[in-house]
Image (cartoon, rainbow, N blue to C red; front, side):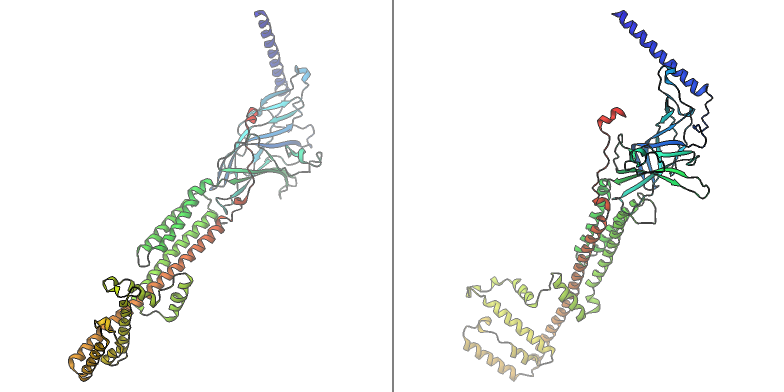
Length: 541
């Protein structure tokens, strides 16, 4: 048994040794003894072009630098062409049909990234190329490309970017190297006509793509272009790959948009601060500074372009303007609140607009005189009066209203310059129960006697001074009431203006927030990202 295993091992070693010898001999014959020149285009006729099939395999989207407008991608570059100087008869070399040689030892097409943003224009990692006995060479080196990408920040952070990678032969025109897409024959209507350059909807191999945590890759297309330049009459082909990516907005929504919306809502608290409070302005200024910090943060995220303003920048700028407006509104409200002591009575037209009409529209009508009297009555403790005289109506409330009307009539009479004594006696008709008399006759006789005495002593100095004192007190209280009424009107107008500005702010904030944030096309783009690599694909990676 051991002898059998020994014979098998020796035979296998002999076969491997023989195979390696054939491959070495083939390599020497092709590249060393055959005077192969890697600087010469591999064609039998100089007028014939080299047919170069070019393609990409997407490995990973490393980064999209919006500030510098550079997209960094990890690609495998697929290049297939035919070298007529590297053909052999496999029967002469022990059946070897392919070998791997260093890429630096054979002719290579100098394809490079035309829209390179930073780094090397050409492939820097020189892996080995595969040679087949028919002369077909396949070279698949990995490369990290940093391509320039025109970043459109109009809808940032709900944006969709379209980045391009343009590859072309740098030293040769289309008559020397004819560059076509590797899957061109799959989509071409006429496979023999190389002027037929179809649009490749799936232009990049995505089987081994590793998904990005920041971007969704929506589409990868390819298109061959033939360009002519003023310097030359020859055509110059290139293949442009277009990568469409959509930003994942969770990070920006949580860290920028939600805090900005919350700060915008905090501005509402400034309108609920009382009109006579000086902290009303301080709150608005603090919110204004917070919005300014978010605006400075945005400057480091987007490129400094003057073409368009980012969507997030528009929202922050709108919030900044609205918060500034709230500061101005707070100053206006405070000015209106303390205006009563400066300008006096409110103009009738202004009062009609704000106090009478606008207050009713905003559901904050001013209490009527009857409601104010009722509120004053409700503040008096009537329980101390003999309310048990009637089980339904408290008579003292009725007497209170009578006395109040007498006082008002007396004050009106005094302001009109009438006789204070006659006005007082004419208007004052209290009932006997209110002044403590139980019998009507006794009350009537007493009042008549008082009237007779006051009529007889019409011009007594003491009585005259007493009535003048009463008139002065009534006039002083009336002036205080008028002054308080004027101030109350201005304070009430300030409240109406504050409520009006609140509704204007809420309406503008809601409309502009919905208009700006829902205007991004990416919010309504339901296209799924390209599928990531599956576990079964890892076996072929």
